[in-house]
Length: 348
Image 1: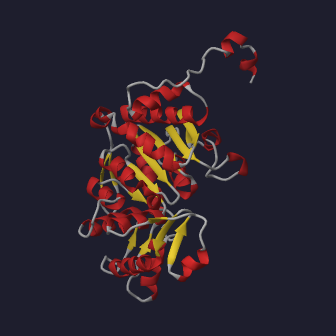
Image 2: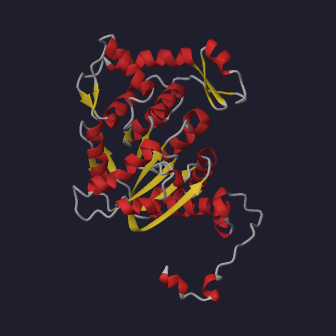
Image 3: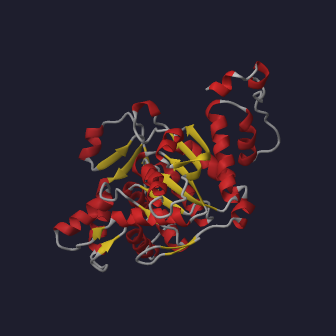
């Protein structure tokens, strides 16, 4: 850029790296703070922590996108903590994560394995594999069928995915063995959205119920778009946190674009964090940079943003553990409240 050509050598070499010092402070928050002086993805993770804290200090609605098989991978309790302590205000995820969450809430388990295993043998024993994690397909099918039957007890009309997941959380709260994402969100009045709900075992359960005439529920995902746009439009500022990409990431990204049609002065998400493993040069949304998103108006021109290229099962526990040591930020934050009616009511 032209302005960079005028910089002197001294101007450019002005911030030295700081070798990481191990000391008596064993806090994860302190470690992340010290990592701001190192390089590569360690510094990016430290900046993500700093930006998340800034969101909590600001009058900001925090929207989170969660993709990949993170619940089977052991991240359920971590996300539950974020909901219970209002470190996020809205969660968009895959139907698979919500299904696996309900599955674990009811007491079912996922199991570890060596990823080098005979998958034909697993299929013959009705065992499903997600890299180094296994699940019992027989139990999956029992839960699929239950979803189809239970949904028939609801009023047979269109539902947003947010309203459907709220009703599911209410029902599972009466059966739960351990708190899950869906039940915690129900209790905290946190909206959950699942724009690709048909692409999951929840969709399979509803399809099975439809086929056997047990339910005629229709998912109104366009109203999901309206509701997330209204959340963005009524917020002073919005911040986004992504673990993985896919549909959840784009669904949250487009909330600001849709909001521009509701309120003219919407400027894009003001804070933005993503922990992803996809590279931008393949052209997919999962790996696209926030700079690219600025061209669409999804991210504000002056946004504080960082991309950390890191496995979510590493980044998510570290960041959330760090936040758990900053409890005053959570207690004192100004946050939106929601009334979970047939149409979402936002109290900014």
